[in-house]
Length: 186
Figure 1: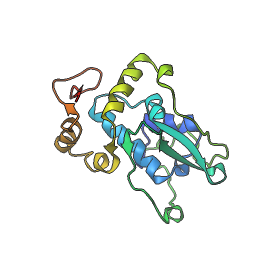
Figure 2: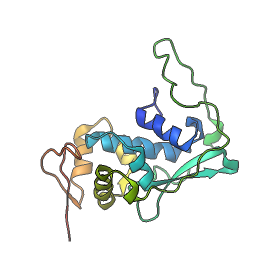
Figure 3: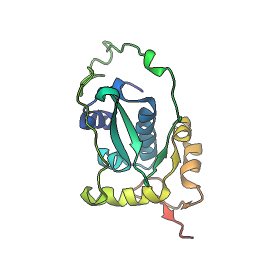
């Protein structure tokens, strides 16, 4: 997790009514991986698109929040299947004089009533988001650990995203960015 939080991260936390520390580690990995994927594709990440592929579930007395793939819509695979002992390793975050607004935009205190949200139906999304979801659904199964590890290696990230078995790359796309994705029909 990096500070200051991105606009997407702030909007998502606001939508689910949760403080940053209430999200499980895999949930943060999903958020970061989606930002990396969308950054590569030249498009700002969308909370609506994210919530089309993920459900928000409350855990343990409604305090903890986990983001889970919607069955049948696996855009991103989990970073790790199980994190053990992470809850006791919190640290305090304070703003410095250099970035006084780093924590603005959403509650930092723990929220007792986080929102459990079902996924957003495709029909309820704006048309552009519907098209993006359809393309991403066909290309899904991106490995979160791979996306995060390749974040600062543009060449390797492009190779990972654009040369997968079911994708062919071409020219720049205003909808998706640096690689035009054509779906290969077997």
